[in-house]
Image (cartoon, rainbow, N blue to C red; front, side):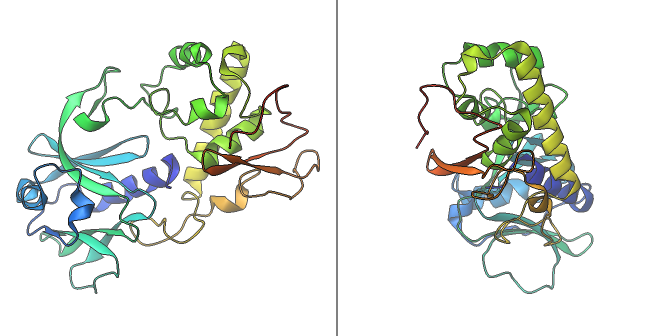
Length: 291
């Protein structure tokens, strides 16, 4: 699933091509792709008719266009969603789900989604508890570590109050958003912390180090355009990201750790996988793999 860097890359592309342009003739080709828009596909299209995008924003793995109506066109890419900007006359992609024409310059914003786990919806903007202005359906999601609204001290205090492993906490969107499986493993490797380490026992310095490593890995991934494994994640021009080449832990099971040479270990984790170095990131005493 695309994580913060991938979604941010897409947001930047959408901002470049869609802001200042109005939508006309929106077509929903697969109702499942607007299933979270409770009023249905026709209402979704009607609420976009003639509306101009005035800006873009992102919170965690969600991105949206701010509309001149005071609403937002919210997108979640799911496992395979793509927002592409194409000439209106370009052939339709195989898994094209929603077509959003921008007649002023002949382009279209297209939502393509092979697995149809992603979705679009129109939602009102509200003020979140942290002071940000976000679509109402994502007001419960915490800011991410690159967001100016992210409060590191509050995060550290909330983290230490949790009774869970640190990797599970990093994936908890009510604590911190935008960090998925890939970048959690990378940040933990850099911080030399095992994902099963109890959050309640973390020292303030360890939390600060982890936050710094999370920020570093996210920024580095952004510079490379994100991480692409199967070709399903692309930017608005259909191009893949290249941060996969810089991964130190994730996906490297059995390969030598770049720090110490020990083989990277793969463990089952919440129906996914975790990758750690047994030497650099020793498992806490008594902890079992989180299958």
